[in-house]
Image (tube, helix red, strand yellow):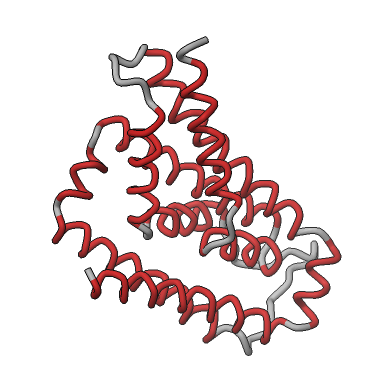
Length: 211
């Protein structure tokens, strides 16, 4: 029972962080509405894989090392901000372009593998998330040697939390109602999503500039 408490505590903390709106939420929702449920679920899978990477690195202690190496952390923050700005540019540039729909009503060209990759890169683009993972793990894990089952269960559980939450987002936003709303106001919605991405990217870069 003593070893189950850290597991449930970490899962709850990560779940609360995943539910908080951010670039990952914007990307999954927009992909599911503008693309297809399959593309949205692919992006959700990428988010889950990013969480798996962060959890594994936190367990290995590499994220704690990253937080101590100022220049490396700074570089990653700038790179993450630039990636979010790139996504914002893509959204803004495509805002005026009509969607190309196939006969089944699904947006053409939204490949599952590409959606997984975009989701993974978006999740990994924010090194602050990595440091949050490290902080949660450091605060809630027991100080003694971890049991092997807990070391294996934690990354798997966090993958389930991240992937499961964003799969729910993708399923909800790929329904007919949200899709019709999006098609009716595509330009405004894409520009709004692009603006949010740009703001988040600029904030990450400015935070790194302030040190």
